[in-house]
Amino acid sequence: MINLIKFKHIHYYIFIFICKKYFIFLKSIFLIILIFYINFLKFIFFITNLFIYLTFLYYYIHMKKNKNLFLIGPMGAGKSTIGKYLSKNLQMKFYDSDQEIEKRTGADINWVFDIEGESGFRKRETKIISELTKKKGIVLATGGGSILSSENRKFLSARGIVIYLNITIEKQLLRTRKDKNRPLLQNKDSLKSTLEKLAKERNYLYKKISDIIINADNYSAKTIVQNIIKSLNL
Image (cartoon, rainbow, N blue to C red; front, side, top):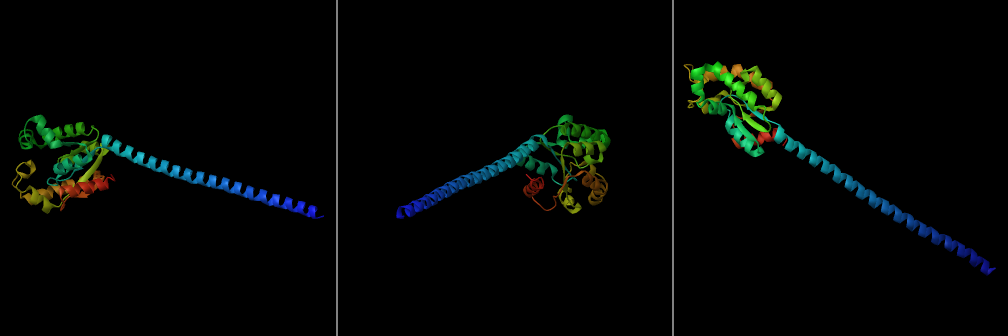
């Protein structure tokens, strides 16, 4: 009888032992699956971040190689100076439409205005802007009156990001009052009235085609360039 009871107890102990082993086995399997799942999530997280980084890198390189930045704005806004700083920061090629006209004519802007008049100058300007805007990955500083031409506005809007450097009449007066190389300022009218007239004719066109408007009034060229880069989300 005692042996029979012991035999029954042995079966109970065997059952408990098997259950414990089975539980340990299941626990091990669960831990293995959990570790695998955690590592899988880490891998997915890594791949996602890698994809985002590569996408950003591709966009950045693609923009530098293919996207153009066009600076527009009135005389005295600092388009040439800022354009040079900007191109250096972004490692892009810099062009100045007025300088390109001077290179090709072998004469300064004043001479072109004197000989060919403003209409002749504007024709040359449109030809230069048409040519330069076809390039890829450049920073282009345009003349203050370039936006008067509907062709120029079309070229600039369609072929790059247009950045309008906004400046007040008062700041223009400070920057241009001693400048003898601006044909439109060499007349009998007061400098202020001339600048006000030009602003009335042009400011709405600057705003119309601009993608980004930057205040260039009371900031250094370095700060303005930083503000442009922030606006471009680079």
